[in-house]
Structure formats: C-alpha cells, structure tokens
Length: 511
Image (tube, rainbow, N blue to C red; front, top):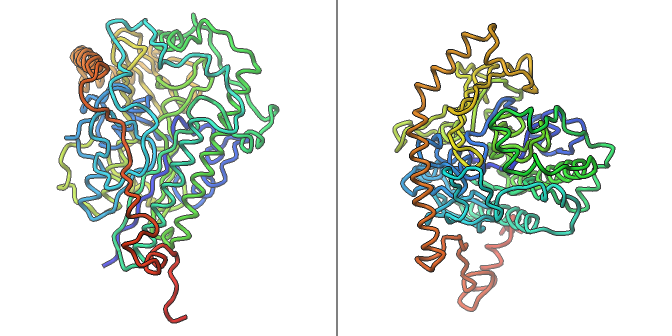
C-alpha cells in the first residue's frame, strides 16, 4: 500500500502576499517561495478568517469560523474539546509536530500535536483581553502604536530573530529525526507545522537581509487617507493604533517598509532551509509543502498599519501548495484558512466520518489538482479590539462585502477596483448584490447575540486573569520537554549504537 504524502506547512505571521515576489512584487526577494509556486499551485484570493493572530490560527487549526468556537481575540481560550487537524492526522497514522508560534491560549498547549518542539513567543493566558464596554480605551501594554514604526531599522538580533532561528533549527532537527526513523524501518507519514513570527512588527531586520534592499527600491503606501476620510471602522483602528494623531515622516515609513521586505526575505530563507531538509532526508517528492500566513499587514496603505481590517493587505494571505498530485498554476477562486483542515484530510485519505465537529471549509485539493471547484467563497469575522460590535466579511467571486451593525456597509468590486477605493454599497448598479449580501449577513449571524457573548467572555476572562495575577493556578506557557539523560551519549548507552542512530544517512554495513 502506498504511503500517504507527508504534509509540511510553513507559516508566516503578518505576511501580505502583495509583498512577495511569487505574487508579483517587483523587488521582493523570495526565491524559495517563487520556486514553490513555479512547481505548484498559487491561490490568488486566499483569506484569513479573522485578521488577528490567535483567532486566525484557531480557525486554521479547527476548520471552524471563530464565532463557532468563541475564538474572538488574542486572549480567547482555544478549548481542548475542539478537534483540530492535528488530532485527525494523528488518528490517521501521521506523526505530527508543531515548531513555533500558534498563540494557543489556555492550559492545552498541544491541541493534538504529538510533538511540540519549541515554546510560544506570546503569552498563553488572558492578559490581552479587550473590553467592548470601553472600546475607546487604549491598553498601552500591548496595543500597537506608531512608536513601533518609528523604531524600525536594523539590529544584529531581536527577540523575534532569536525565536525564529530556534523554530527553524527545531523544525529541521525534527525532520532529520524522521529521516532517522525511515533508516530504522519506520514508515509513518508525518505532518509538521513550522510557524515563524516574521515579518510581524517590530519592523527590525538583520543586516544581511536589510542589505538586500536599498531605499530607492522601496515603494511608498498608496491611497493614504486622512482620519476624517476613513470609514468608521477604519477610523477606530486608526485611532486605536494612534495613526490618527502621530505623523510619520516619509523616511520612517520607508524604513519600516524596507525592514518588512527584509524580514519577508528572512522568512523565505527559513522556508528554503526546510525544503532543503526534505531533500536531504529523501522526502521532498512525497511531501506536500504549503506556505501561508495568519493574516497580512496594511503597512501604511490607506493610512493604516498592521491588521484588524478586511482590506486586501490585511485580510488576504499567501497560499502556495506544491507536491505529489499538485499541478502547476494559479487560481483566482476565493478560499480561506478554514479550507486547510478538509484539504489535509483529503491528502491523508481520511473519510468525512472521522470529523468530530462540523467544519466551515472545503478541500482545496480539487483546485490544487487542476480540477473544477464550484465554490468561490471566503468568510471573515472580527470580534477583537478597536470595535464595539462584530465585523463580518463575505468575499464571493469578485465582490467583497463588509458589515458591522453600527457602520455603513461596504461593497467592493475587486475586478474593477482592486485597491478598494470605491464603496459601491449605495451604487444603483450594485443594488441587487448589496441587498443580497445584507440578507445573507442577517441569515448567517445574529450580531447582537454574538456581541453579548463576546462581552460575557471578556468579563469572565478579565476576572480569571486578575485571579491568576494574584497567584491562582499554574502558568500555561509551554515548556518543551527535555530529558538530558536520554540525549547524545550517556553511560547506559553503547556509544557506537548511539553514533549509528544519530548518523544520517546511515553507514552501509556492506562497506
């Protein structure tokens, strides 16, 4: 029986596809992403399901929209009772591992992964809980502001480069161990998620990546709007990140965008190292490699920074897939991160009867294999800071509709207006489409009920965080297990056997 393909996901944080060479950026150095796209499928309308780190990742892991699992913000617990693709792949005989960030909140810090080989980079408790009953209050300890942009530039090391270097090393060593398993006769497929923090702000790059670019290479943001010209939701975000009161110089903006591109190239180098390791262990031809991100970055476009909106630079993500059975090409059909769990089950040969909970996505493997797919849809939900009400997005075909009960609706025709400059929600030529989208929002969501649940969970989490700060319970930050007595060469081992085990490829006993 043919072994199912391995699955390797290489995930960036805050990577907008518009800043990747594989998606047409004129100066971005992303040779490894480009090579993946050259032999695989590039998805040109892939979206996150919530433009914020933890909610997006919980949707990615579970295949469920955030309103279904109460994954509202960066301090929402990801319940252990929610099945993930790691659970399902484990049940299908895969050896599974996570190296890097997934921003799990709560006492379960593995969520189905057999191995987790690094800690996380962000806190795992309820500290970052927003307050919708005081939506205009800034929480300076962890809210973004423009100081982050102003401090952009070059450094030999940051906490983010320290972390990503560790993530890359741990991922490569785990893959080499799978090669060692093969050499010992093991034949289980494996699934690895290697999840990096770059190019997430702070926009600070190592010199070797900064020097790939010059200031003359860096394009400036387009369509910058003043605070008074923003739609209400964008204005709230602009106020929340202090972009409405802090003026940035062109030099500061250019420096941030240069550092961001440098860190895109740094991330791309990590992708290249992982692909090279697959080559070295002889598994590339039997591995489906996927590169994606949790959300994008506005990077000054429209006068906005970071994420938290449903504009293209914030909500779209790169999604490139290559490996056995995947054809070379690109597709414009809308999809989202919740589609990856069904895709992984498709790759692994799993039956839908395996599912322990409903999923909100569909398999993307028909598209990846060059087949027809009637679905052209992505759904987004935002229930975190800088809004007092849920914000919803529906992308169907070329149209994108954004709704919040307290704001005017927005409708963009991306085929005519890819930069989303003209809101067509009141355009008579789009009246039928706007009415249909409004009716669909009403069918899909009870916004008032969802808002009440968000506020209730916020109150509960703030109370629990106060108790934990006072000393109640153990911290949840993940400590990767390590037993030095079983590593390398120890007295209870025959060192020649240990050397044989560690050497890869192994020596041939005929020589």
